[in-house]
Length: 399
Image (cartoon, rainbow, N blue to C red; front, top):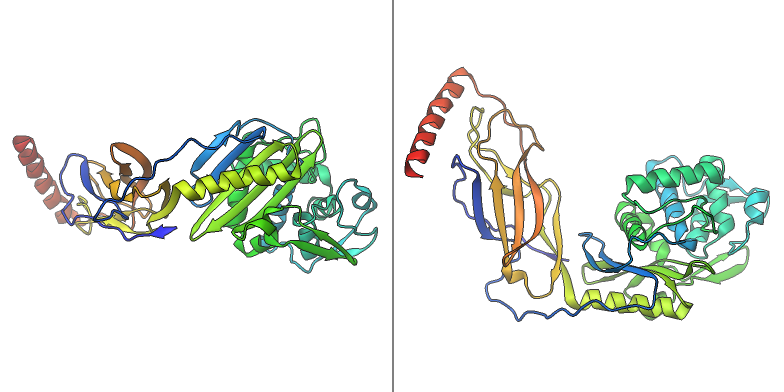
């Protein structure tokens, strides 16, 4: 991800109409570079797919991305996410011991090979879920965290709603077929974005190629971990109904992409189709950090306050994914509210920041006050009223 500092004019923003400044956006270059021509995204041999930038959330390619499909073991991404969330909250620890029930042990499909009555550490179970897709490990953590698969599935659905996964509903922590168990490529990409960004301290597990438990060594089924050194996750899935599915993420330089393919015909096909998506994204796009959180973008006039100007900017980092070699076309436009009146609190919205590429608006963010402004004293407010009256008069006359 390319990082640039903010560049703005020092002109005072104290006009009484909506204050607007057009200036070079962060990342604008002195000399234009040849534009990269961007072809149409690749067409894949899959039912559904999506390519997303992990930092900006920009969708670079998609097909049937919101279609509700059986997710198979991609389900375990949500199971692992909830374990990671509880670890982050401190309600469980990696060395906590989980008692393995007969139900967990009997669960069919892929296994970590835990035994009934065995005490297994959360850390081992998390590895078993992510690397070898253990259904037994998934049921064990569901029972430990929520008392059973059904209440754990309820938690999964609550968090899916919180994360904006509008086309997902889970009935179990494993991904074994269920009549009302479904997700979408888009939802899986959103979930992966949170796995990567919310709990990075656990993300390294997704890149591990093997896991050995009880003397049984099993490989990660994500073939791209062996083929592409920039791929570092995440999860495979298969059932006869779902076909072969793969959620992957790769990082090259400072750009991280997330790809999801669902409903391919074979293990090899899901790897090849994923590679097509990742190659397309890295070849034709770049991610830039335009402004850091808290960057001061202007200091407009504020009326009736204990100070005359207020620092305004963005309360979240502004990151954008754009076509390569077009950052010389970027411009930033500040649209400030017509008049700013005290009191103001940190975080109060005071306008918008627009990022333009040529004639197109490619991004918009809120502008907020970055400091508190208290009401001024009686004489200060009276003085500002007089000044504002004459400023309006002059503005109307000259306008």
